[in-house]
Every structure is written in structure tokens, then in C-alpha cells.
Image (cartoon, rainbow, N blue to C red; front, side):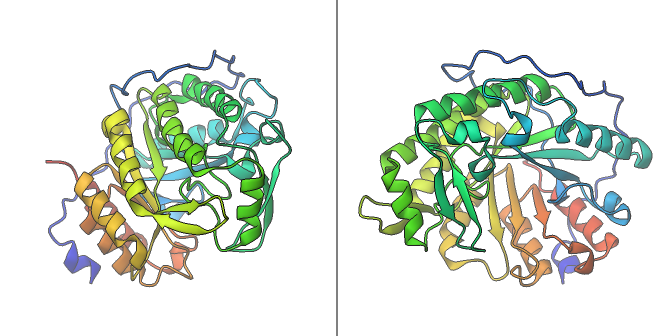
Length: 357
């Protein structure tokens, strides 16, 4: 049982949060994109600890059982105009107001993770950089979407400028603890997945100029771009890297994934949160080596479980995450039917006990 597995976990009492200034609703002026990394982040805000609602504000009955929630936002909604400012009164601003209200009401310190989606959620002007948008099919659900040439320098400059805008407005907001790295993505916030299993996807990428060398460079650059966040942790979702070679064949290169985990820690230090969004029971066999490497590299670590229909035993999945040393775990949608507020509160406290010595 989960309770038995975590009987020795530290139970941390939630405390009230200090007052904070209200988020600005004004548009933020566009800073000049950085041409080089800003240096390792310093004076970091606390990492997110505990279970998180991956779809936004948790149900009232579960608010006090979790450590925070995820704000899912699209680049296209935040910066609809090329080179323009962030949209005022956006979903991030609303989430900040909401979490402050919850913290005040329940005397808690809930935090936010920003999942800022690029890929098919990039603005049309960014998708058209360097050529027409690239048509892809999501192998998981058959949905069609278009992406831009994320591996090119022109796309990278646009993303860098957008990232600078976000950091300028939100890096000093204490409730925003983590933000995802998503420049080199397609349908989800997982930059090491190339939607293999559907040959037309590979053909479309190659026809648009995609190469493995350019893609690997993109992975390094998106991590370097995260140095504009000086007080906020940056999460990058790792999977065994899908290699699309010049002939359109797909293989996996897990050692490259490991090298990028090490690179992220070298460049960002403890601001780099190693994340995986595929945790389930039993774990995917092709991921076991990667999970072992994550455990060796150590905290901060974050996970998202598979969907409710694929997670298997949620109890076993959370126990496995605890064993790896996870700081936080995003619950599947519909988690209310998979556990009680009390059981999830226990797990949240156990995750909070996974602190470095």
C-alpha cells in the first residue's frame, strides 16, 4: 500500500504565504532578444513540491491536498503579433490572481507551473518563418496540426524574444515556480519526441529542411535561452530521443537524452528541473535507463503521469516517483475518481519530504 511505502515520509505543515503585489495587467514592452546566455540563474524561488493538477485550478475538495497547479497556455494567445508585447490580462495573469486568492483563503503556499506550448500552438507568424507551415499528424489521436521550422535561427530568435518577454514580466512573481522549455516541440511540450510511427510526418520534416544535426542544436539552444529566467526553475520534458535520419527511418538515441540532461544541469544548475511526462505502472521498458539516469542526477525532478486510461495503478506510479526522488507529480485528469483528498494530501507531504540532504 502507498501509505505503508511512505510511512517514514516527512509531514510538512502548510503555512500562510506573505502578501505579494498584484500582477500587472498592462502589456509588457518587448526587450531586445538576448544574443548570449545570461548566466546561471540565481536566487531561485522554491521548487514545486507535491501533487499538481495538470489541467488548472483543482476542485475545491482537493485544493488543500495538492502543492499547486499547471497553467497551460499557448504562445499564439500570449503573443499574437510578431515582435509584439504579451497580451494583457492573459491566462497567466488570471492564474496568479486565482492562486493568491486560494492561498489567502486556505492559508497555503500553492505554486504555479507555466506550461507554455509552442509547436502546433505557436502563432501563425512564427510558423511561417522561413517557409510555409509544416503539416503533421499526431500519431496518438490522428489530429492534424501545423508547426514552424523550430530548428532554424529565425524561429529561435522569435522564441528567444518571446521568452525574454515572459521572464521580464513573470520572473519576479513569487507564485510562479517553474516554466517549461518548449521551443523544439510539435504537439506536446516534449522536445525529444518527433511523432514517429507515421511516415508522412518524417517526410514533411525532411522536406522542410529538418536534420538531426539541426535538431540537436535546437535542443541545446532552447536550454540556453532559459537563462533569461534568473529566479524561476525551468522544466524540460525528457524522453528517449527520436532520431529521424535523412532516409526517413526513425530510431531512438537514449544516450543523447542523457547528454542533454547533463548539459541542462551544467548550464542552469539546480534551476534545471528534469521532467518526464510518461510515468505509469508498469514503467515503459524503453524508459528505465533514462529514469535511472534521472535518479542519479538527482533533484529537482518532476513527473507527469500517463492519462487515467494508461497510468495503470496510480498508487504504484506515485510510489515509483517517490523512489526516484520526485519533487512533484502531475496527476492525470479525473484523478478525483482515483483517490481521496486525504490520500493525495499524504502523498503531497511525502513528496515534500524528498528534499536534498
